[in-house]
Length: 227
Image 1: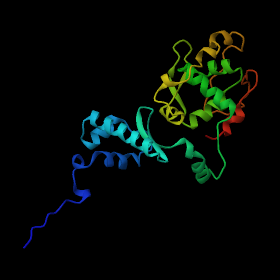
Image 2 (image 1 turned 90 degrees about the vertical axis):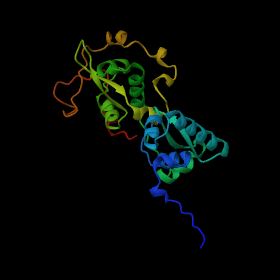
Image 3 (image 1 turned 120 degrees about the vertical axis):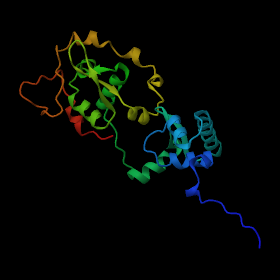
Image 4 (image 1 turned 180 degrees about the horizontal axis):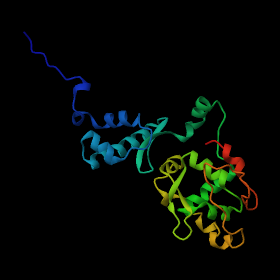
């Protein structure tokens, strides 16, 4: 009677016994936001350095093999992304050739927030020279900006960009923003030339309330912008 060697099914093996790279690939296939090395190491019961090395090796292997996807470190974590040269095929599959983008006004507003954060909406409006209420609402709804406390002097709500912004922009952190800040005028200098005290909006209040001042035009049409 011959001896039979048996191996536990994969589902019954402990997490620590799993092959590291395939385990990382399986986990990263289902994440909906970048996964940190610390979190992955904790789940797999491995040292963080070992996990970090394995992730970088995987990223290099995909690049050498010319895969249609890549493993990138973005917004403090790792996630799979379509390789740039194959983006047209993915866009055709998902969007059928149609793209939805932020308008120029929304992009300008987002840029001001990104470079001057934390910043109040009155300062953003002063830099752009138009009322940014509608655009800011859009950016909030899209999860690209969020509240970041209040300005001590005025009590105005301050805003900053989110991790989702970093993810969408493909940045590891705000220090990777292009060197554009020197080209933005100082908000304090511009505010002296604009209406004093541009009001901050109440998200639950109508945009066209009685007596609401609008500095040099408005971008409220961008409330319908899709990202």
